[in-house]
Length: 365
Image 1 (cartoon, rainbow, N blue to C red):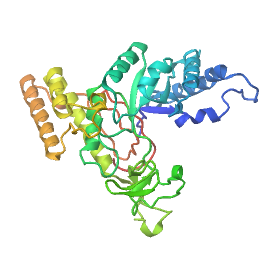
Image 2: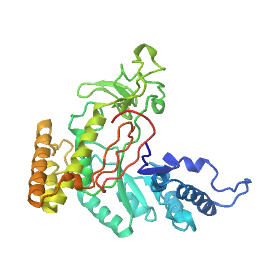
Image 3: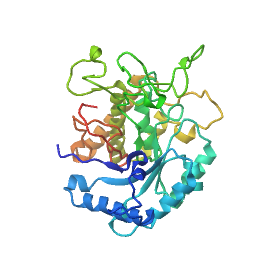
Image 4: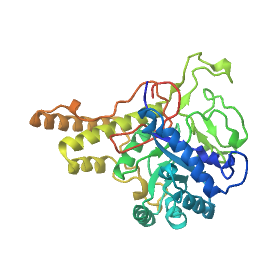
């Protein structure tokens, strides 16, 4: 459909490091610093040679995933900052805590952090330091109380809250790690029948009186946002449908993204101050504002679905009134259109503020 990717990860989850980037085409050792210049240059040259819908894609090198080897991350990031030629425009990214990133890996271009609880003062200081360093902050996974739960037992409004939280704090990208984790190989359990088993990640090790089934990294729906229309691993439960089924969580996520579109229109027609007042009313305490002193804090965003729809209606009325006064229409505004047939692993670009990646596939998210 001639739709571009918003973001493209080079070496997803750090897979580039297993491809001998420190060697030339004949296999001779050239050192990783020279290898970065050669390989990133090739990637950049390829992108620039493509059609506009491809060449406009933002690309980055996924250095490493959830590593605590800060010395190695900093060394790689510093090498990438020294790349010459066309590849010098490709930034580095790693998944690690922002507080550690600004202290241990200041050469990193993008840090992608996860949040559930966070020390308020330390995170505020880290955000300020990242801005000083020119380090971009993205977020991935995470959950309550910082933002909504990503698992199936979360409230319907949880996924809807995530784009609101990102918009409130100006986070460009929210990265959800996987949408089709049908084999729980990290727990050594193999294929999961996702139509009969809620648990998709981790191990069942005990039956807790408070939490029910529990164990190492136990997660219901973790890594699964799309369900197979045709399941060849468990044909007895296959629906025989071409293409995947979108989960309700993905639909709620889409609703939150659309809300943020409304926020942008509302800001353009009614002003920044009114838009910020809506944000503060709907998500008053999210991300690092939550803190870590109370393990059972009240959730700040509305739990009732009608409360969200009421806010959207209020914004729509405000936009309509502003349009009537200025004799313009919302069709004059540059709003992103969401295309059917896109399998979304990370949400689409939202109102020039929230940027994201998407994978290949089919299905209406």
